[in-house]
Image (tube, rainbow, N blue to C red; front, top):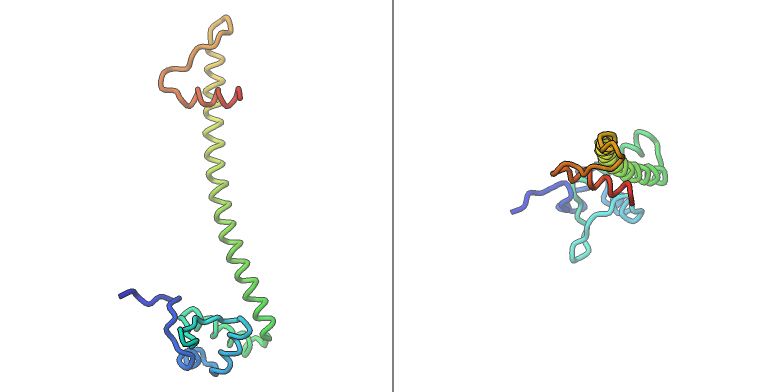
Length: 146
């Protein structure tokens, strides 16, 4: 049997209400407003997961302790989702920058080897072929001449 994760919908509305410290009707209102969207059973009953319970507790805290209205909470949640997406994008872009930096360093190394080879070519200016096994130099020459 699979382990129950934080996204597994297992709590009926009465249990979710008790765990969150809210009234079941309040949970229905939050569902209608889209603040918490529990899964539905085939009979249309709501099933809340552990993540939903955490969200409900946060809504309760924000309304009761911070005095934030539901429109404000919706806006906060929207900003948090956007911030999470942006953090993911920043991570992706940092990885890309790292890969590009590595590729640039590799390209610079190949260019330096090419320059050394050109300086070491014959006295008449004829280019000497790269040593055997230097496919990276050949590839770099092709890139430079393309």
